[in-house]
Image (cartoon, rainbow, N blue to C red; front, side, top):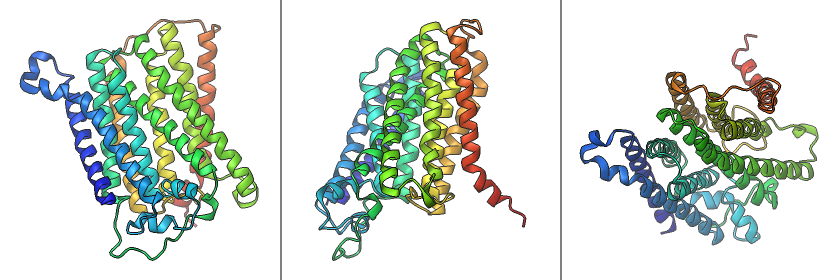
Amino acid sequence: MIAELGHAALWLATALAVLQMVGGALGLRDKSLRSGNDSIVALARPAAVVQAFLAVLSFLLLLYAFAITDLSIKLVATNSHSMKPFIYKLTGTWGNHEGSMLLWVAVLALSGGLLAGLERRLPEKTMSATLSVQGFVALGFYSFLLISSNPFERLPLPAPEGSGLNPLLQDIGLAIHPPTLYIGYVGLSVAFSLCMGALITKQVTPDFAKVLRPWVLAAWVFLTFGITAGSYWAYYELGWGGWWFWDPVENASLMPWLAATALLHSVSVLAARDALRTWTIMLGVLAFSMSMLGTFLVRSGVITSVHAFAVDPERGSFILALLGLYIGGALVIFAMRAGYIAEGKRFSATSREGALVFNNVMLSAILAIVLLGTLYPVFTEVFDVR
């Protein structure tokens, strides 16, 4: 019954994501043009809040299934064991592809619910656009879970015993490293939705930046903590030498961190000096795109890594399609709307703001180098003509 309840909660959350997306989109229309759609618009916020409850409930049900070692669920049977210490039973929930994606979705939905339930400073249309984008992002990940990565799949017959957790993952680091990174990644998804909402409604203002800044700061803090914890874990678990001297997928978390650092500086300038408007929006898109790229690298198998959750090309193709849809669509909207955003105040190249711009350029250059170095082996393999 646990699996069926968790699966049903995911389907209901998906339906609410559609409602949130549609309600938010309708909220962009003038009130005189909405006719009888005002009731749907009003449901966008509640839909996000209830969706958060259902997504978190789904994850808690999977956590409970691991806690009691329900061997009728395929994911539990392949990633846990009845004799494992309790802490490893719990961490085994996200020590695999399906469970980690459910954790990602739960944090994403919870963040969207908090944004919808607590934020009242944004203009109505900007908030509607933000909720619509957030619903669209959530819908893609719900679809990914339900279509190709169902964490609640049942076995025809319960397994006599579980296969156990990967020995490399039987460490307290698994309880800290992935969850903190996911919170950071998801914080960047909310920043992306806020940036797109402000861009669509042309409301890239200091007030918008004051709403955006806490989300970026929280994402940056959790990414920093997650990367540090992961580095220490790798040091004492893998020796930080030999074959794993530098796991290329470590860059999957470093690249969003570099983009988030630049975005944090940029949004601070926008909030305090009303400058760098389009640059802030562009960095918001870039930070989330790096987060999505990291998800693709870890789950597609295109790069050999101790971090690889999955090597299924079908799953990798699904995430790549989401990456193209989200980021490609965002860049199209940016190209269409950026010219309509007011320039903002100018500043001297030798001012504090000028120094922050130089810092952003350097961070972006480092990001480009890391990105090229990470993907270079893939490019050489694809274009190898020997």
